[in-house]
Amino acid sequence: MLSLWRRHLADCKPGQKKGRAHTGCNCPVWCDGEVDGVRVRKSLDTRDWQRAGRKLSQIEDPSYGLRPCGHPGCNEMVASGRCARHTREIPRAIAAYHDAHQDAAESTKRSRRRTLRNFEEFITARGLKAVDEIELEHLNAFRTTRPISARTWVKELEHVRHFFRFCVQNDWILKSYADLVPMPRNLQVADREPYTPNEVARIIAACNQIGRGAYERLRARAMILLLRYTALRIGDVAMMERSRIQGGRFSSGQRRMENKCDCPFTPTYRPHWPCFPFPAARMARTAPICFGAATGRDDH
Ligand SMILES: [Zn+2]
Ligand SMILES: [Zn+2]
Image 1 (spheres, protein in one colour):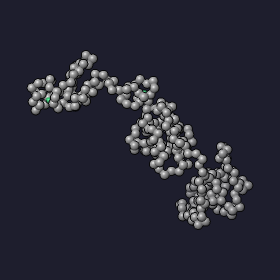
Image 2 (cartoon, helix red, strand yellow):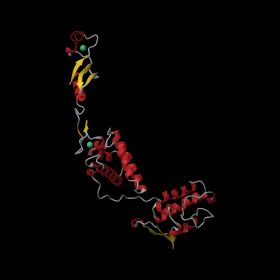
Image 3 (cartoon, rainbow, N blue to C red):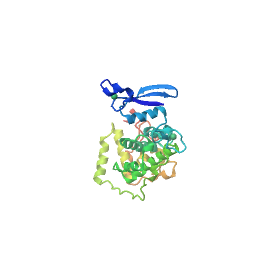
Image 4 (tube, rainbow, N blue to C red):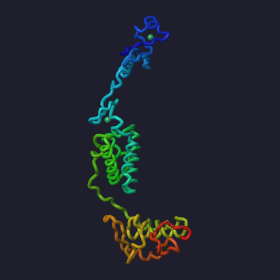
């Protein structure tokens, strides 16, 4: 049992006279007594009697003022919120999420990292520290902070939802507010303005000003013309294998059916065929990738 008293300063006249019986001044508060058979006599680092009383209760009973962790079934006592087992600081949760999804495709991982980096910046700028502090209104506000299209938001929201489901699985939060954020529906395909003839001419002209040598400029021009006349995806052009061009057609050999592409080289592109460069004289017509990385000295 502990009791409070004021340790009177030298200039506290009534205190000096009456000793511990006097508490009506503003001298530092101490406590004195026994806790579990051990003598305790120490300053409570305050002059406020009420505050000292709360500190005293804490010394007598370490669970004073604590409440059970917010996770159902957890008996851990905490000052507020959830115990260390049942929440995570936001950067740690994001790092754990990436660790757990190492086997996703490179492009997916990149995209998730970008989204969650933005998300972490946004959330920590609002002074939030742990994932269980994030609420629906924060997630809705995240959408409005940057001028992104609905299409981009669909992707980002998918990433954010995936991350919060991971947090639920780990018992760091009880439910995912991200699932309540409305997903844009019925998106119209954005109108694409074609390049004007003048723009096309400038793009082609620019090919003559890039790179370190004639080979790179020729290659850039061939790639641009190929993109111009076939509308192939840039990845298909960059990784175009010579063996997949047969009979005036290019067919990509990707395993996933939805990405498969079979594209005739139109008569419009054929006149440009002669400028189709080969990586090296020595390797002419044997290099597997048409526009493969320059292979060194032999290129020029
Ligand atoms: Zn005093
Ligand atoms: Zn807990």
